[in-house]
Image 1: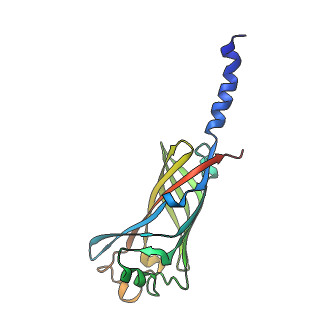
Image 2 (image 1 turned 30 degrees about the horizontal axis):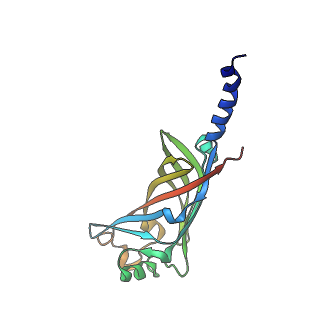
Image 3 (image 1 turned 60 degrees about the vertical axis):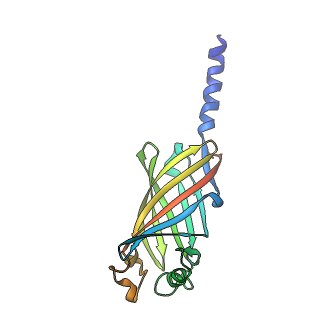
Length: 189
């Protein structure tokens, strides 16, 4: 038997197991949750400084992928402390009564190439709705980068009540963006 033919099955076995990585160790210090909206038709941006994320993603088994992201609403950073206090308050997030927003996936759709769509429930301020969040997946060795976003309508969640429900002041659409970096561990078969 040729040495090449003898080692070929072993090489193929090693090559297939090298691709069986599950990205599930989120690196919080390298990950971000940001948002963009318009206030009096002026583009504005902000971020959340505290959140937790748990994911399990194997590109070879995307149908088994899972994600759970929880955001501490009091950690909002709009760049202005007065705005942060107002948005964490009762008319906006009411962070004392509802301290966290949460996204929990129930499926992932393959869109082609490195593009996917996470399907799940987004909950904030006591309301839950289905959302879809398109994202890209980029593998850099044993680390993966997930970049994506989804748009929510703030009034659907009673965010910005009373005088703040005027859409000429603050637009209804808020784009939530995520950049999640996760290390891998061998996938479970």
